[in-house]
View (cartoon, rainbow, N blue to C red):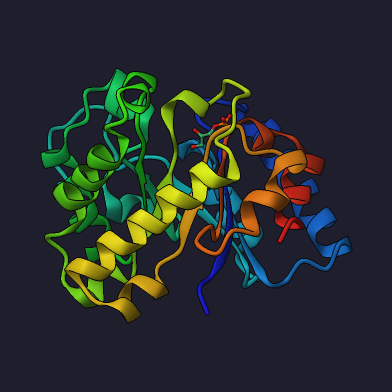
Length: 253
Ligand code: 13P
């Protein structure tokens, strides 16, 4: 059985105090709602990671993650954070290749390949993002682009390693726009990603990998999206900043 996951990507939101309060309230509500079967992940800014990892330490199905990492172990890279630093804060995940990082920080597939390898080496699970901008969707070349993003940054991994990766499909035109992919669009892309993995690795390997949907995912559309056979949960932006919405999403399977 594939893991069901709700991961909150806070992006550059929440002060230290606000972030801690949000997580404390989410934990309380998740307990009250008896959510146990879904893994909840808080992908916070680096400053929150240590404290929040401590808060979630004893809760098996709640974990933390970073939103980026550097591929080197250490060195003169001002402003960067290594995987061992992230791991030392207690995090279990790291988001890699988010479209905002590709777009605003010129993250390339060469860098992503190295980041994926570094994360796995340090026992951090990459949440690897792929997704097409609007013009690519309109040109009807989105399938090719997603295939390329997956191949270029993940296919250097062997079978054992790829099973440790979580993939997130996030159409760029749906991020923060209120415009969600239809369930058909999401299922089509998720099935394509799984088929691509099955072709390169094998069927069992592809079947074991969780593929999340991201892009204006909210309680009102989550149930339908998560009911699709190849949608294993969500990578959530805006709705992860609200306690009720985020926990309602974890309750949407
Ligand atoms: P929104 O849920 O705000 O559209 O953001 C999605 C996202 O980018 C998660 O990584």
